[in-house]
Image (cartoon, rainbow, N blue to C red; front, side, top):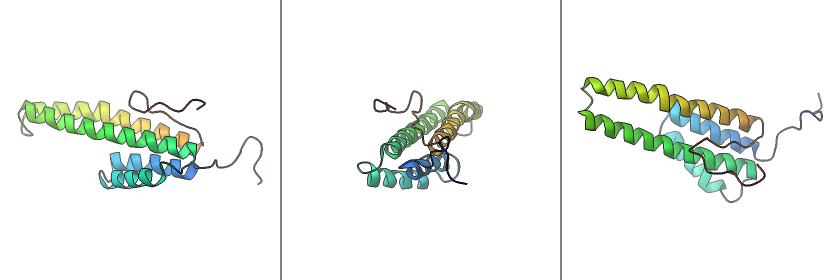
Length: 135
């Protein structure tokens, strides 16, 4: 079936945008660290040459990944400050973190992936850098 006016087809840079959002989710859910390094390499390789859509998604996912890593470091610091991993408060902090922060980051990543698959830009609320004018 040929594309219609309602379905403009894939946009320039859409595949790279989808890859960036997928790597962000893989970093949070499946292979932390490894997926971040791949995302960082992808960003460094394409930051100057990628189409606007891909560049935007690469910037957003890299910033969100850095925030996710910072939150993880802060949670671990809080756990150590509360007395270590064998204290009851540890489980409260971990549950609060995973139910609120981590789940929110995953949900934002799913929305970002959906926007990338639709060929649209996306800004992660609160943690994402501003989008260029016109997006």
